[in-house]
Image 1 (cartoon, rainbow, N blue to C red):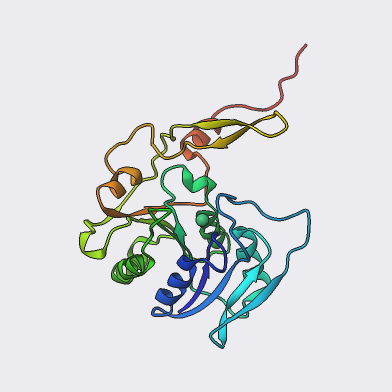
Image 2 (cartoon, rainbow, N blue to C red; image 1 turned 90 degrees about the vertical axis):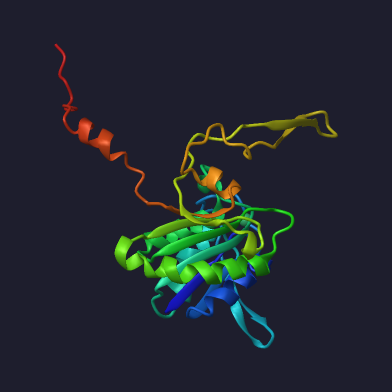
Length: 257
Ligand code: MN
């Protein structure tokens, strides 16, 4: 198996090195990642200036390719220009910080995996539920334990895109692994207001951590209960029910007298 590994925390991130190490136990790994941190850039791509890439050598061997662009740029450039042969799987992460609920939309980690599905490659985003004190060796151990089953079940379930979040717990404290739905209730939104040295008001986003509501099966709830959450997602944002109803209506231009 050939595996495309990327992230949004950048080529030097500890989570990327751990992901590379773990995925090498499953196949041949090619790392193509942003040259520095591009968290929360969502699915943005670079149009206003050119991008380039360089080879990154570590310990005398090729570690990967660093791209001067966003996570989605990395995936596009990877598939179109850097990779010499097709890959069987794309994995994005291990992100420092969870990507639960609607945060999936802001996440560069999730966007990179979604971009993988644009290229028709089964893709996973993997995030650790902590910013400051992530134990990547523990996350790596959890991944080694759960990935064989997750990869195996693709035959049965046909998943194309999984958003996986891992609680920041030692593997022995983990409660289990649960399929989850994306909590779409939104988050409490907050800004902190400051005044800059020139007297202008400036704002820092400080919200986005507390979901407004939770129901059984939500990724935000399950992770707090100590589960790894596996949320299957799709590229297609179409509301098929509404589309069906819209198709029963007549939208042809009405001529008025
Ligand atoms: Mn990140």
